[in-house]
Length: 303
Image (cartoon, rainbow, N blue to C red):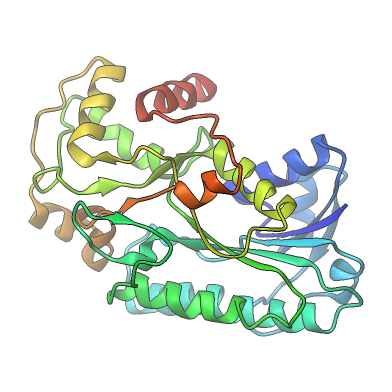
């Protein structure tokens, strides 16, 4: 099966490409820098899409594709200056619009699995959030609503899945690499009281879920891609302290996080308790279901 992957050199994209190749599929990397992609991915078929927000993807990349896994976009985990917010929005909303237009002009109608984010829901306290829960009203929630709107504009006949992905734990960068430094030196602790939930997921399950969504005809619309056991920030802190054999009791006030990250601090201060029930009903079996064991696996792989 020919599967196009956008954002193929990123943490998730490169793992998806490797997984597709290992199971005998034909991955096609669609990336801004084809030379860099070949250096990272090896002999995988690679096509350059240098300005995803401005131009259509190359037709040769999409030709005869059975599926497209769309992972392209500027990192959300950065300080949200006006320029950064503009670049994040353009890279995700407009690239999806251009991709959908390219799919519409393609010789076949592939399945489209378009990455989205659990930030769609905004802050909801300890309420369980399903795919039917309403969107929030902050920058990230508004971004995700617009981002998803472009994906579901795909032509009739394209099965479209919106993979609302949580906080990814990976040995190759990602959220955990930003969480660990204060805990390693013994100054980590719960943030802003620690009651907010973290919708975490191990990179293996992100990849597994994305491929499962490609393979499962019943999968359509929004699907939460997060582990079935979200943890609170306080529980997360306790686990990181325990695993690293460091104290994890130093509370971090909300104002300190806002001073450090600006508006982006909302993603840390306002968590989501996201349900994985729909993904499980679709038949996906998680490889990693507890936060502590997942952290241990990631740290061991990174050592």
